[in-house]
Length: 362
Length: 256
Ligand code: SF4
Ligand code: SF4
Ligand code: SF4
Ligand code: SF4
Ligand code: SF4
Image (cartoon, rainbow over all chains, first blue to last red; front, side, top):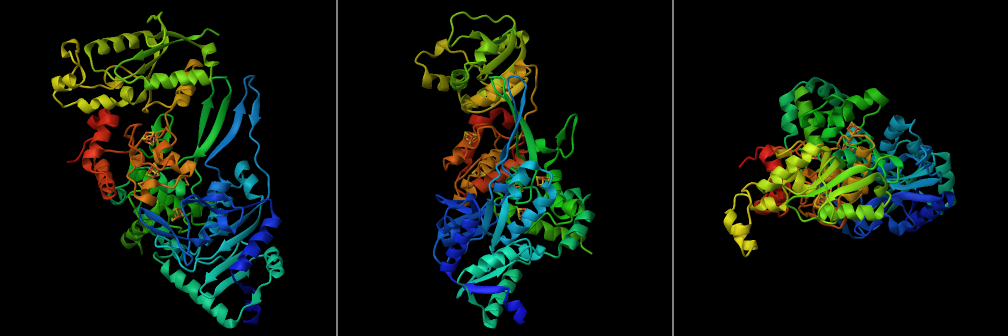
């Protein structure tokens, strides 16, 4: 057990501030869930004050509220690291008046992610595998030199990371993780770099008691987010459900194809090209997020792959649990629950998946 | 290169879309190098309706004369673009359909005998073949300029049918309906405005028209229950849909 203990350190809010400053010195820009006005987005954060540490979100299917309070615990908003890594609107190139082509150049400054949630951490691993050959994505992703994760001891009401195994704690792919407990903050490291930074802070050693409390809190949060059977079971059931047209029509009957689910999903990566020809004769090719729930998504010259909305909703669910594993060896859903919260009609992915498994499970 | 002959035709409408086009010309004066305006009764004296490359038609058809005019324009124009929600869906004036026409006329004109209006309000596609529909109240001037340039260069465009929500999320706005309970028609409305209203903290009232590639009568009825929960009554919803999506309503079956 003693070897285990050295993985953890203990501190308070002041130490979190010191960690933030240390991280800030390490890179050109710190990025995270950024408070702006009465909303939380994702972007550069100047100081700890720009992080939603004093905010509390409450989430339910089709409903989200933010409130202020020192005891608050923030999960996430609609904005995930996708907003930073895979830009919503991205210029690809410009064709100039003389037909010369000006290829867009991408930012190259170093960045650190601070305070992102375990589900969002895994979403980056998924995006990495899908978009590793995408210059724009990779130019930003490869400049992320440090990742600090905030683990979830108080999960939200639409979170189900515990079912997928993507949370509520972080296991790999980070440098430092911290968890806020009632009597202090537990810090842990996930890389040598992370350890070196933590060692420079004035953190105290943890007691066995501290570790036990931390583990209890994480286990409790894990329980709270365990709604679904394991992903392998979900994939198998989904495979058997594909031709049950009436089932898919029923579960998507309230859907209006607004694509909010696609847009907020931290792993949805689809884009559409738009050619904007300016009156000057210049033409810009722009690439922007595009959701498979919209009608035009499945349209190709001469035909349409998924003309009916139920087919597109079914595709969304199948892609997450059946096709991503085949494509990149990871489940495409990280259980963040955003598609549930931000669906204006409150369609609950957990409910749909549960129904599929209860009907088509082994 | 020969300049393309463009006709700007106005039917029943408020001129807002034509104004948008003028603003666009003001911000891109180079447009006038490739365009020659052969017909625009609102802002030039000499107008011809001969050989038209592109007709931009604003407004809906509410009189016999307009019906003939738009057919005439169609027969002379290589490409016809319906601009704005009046031309593409019927527009605000569709609000009077079903009312006593004489009473409506009396409410606005002191001398009703000079007015000859048909009981129906028709979007252009109900009268002639329309090549491109650009909705919006008013139309998005940048989008209009880009389409026009594309068409003049011999290109075409496959419209992207997506909701205002797609744009709202790309801009990164916190959803007014989900996060504050403000009624919003964005989920069922065609995108194109860049989610202007939610960007200013307001709900969308559907001025780009119903996204009928997705929304049918059943889905609309279910969505109206969501709106009702956040405080938009049936009456208000029906009014918005009549003002901005009139011709779409006849296409979809609405459950009572
Ligand atoms: S499918 Fe839904 S719950 Fe899963 S990662 Fe995407 S937004 Fe989150
Ligand atoms: S769920 Fe749809 S939008 Fe998301 S990645 Fe898959 S196909 Fe693309
Ligand atoms: S957010 Fe909800 S209503 Fe909108 S497309 Fe997704 S499932 Fe359908
Ligand atoms: S504010 Fe309106 S347009 Fe924006 S996501 Fe919400 S429902 Fe859609
Ligand atoms: S948000 Fe809705 S009402 Fe506002 S400009 Fe756009 S389409 Fe019109």
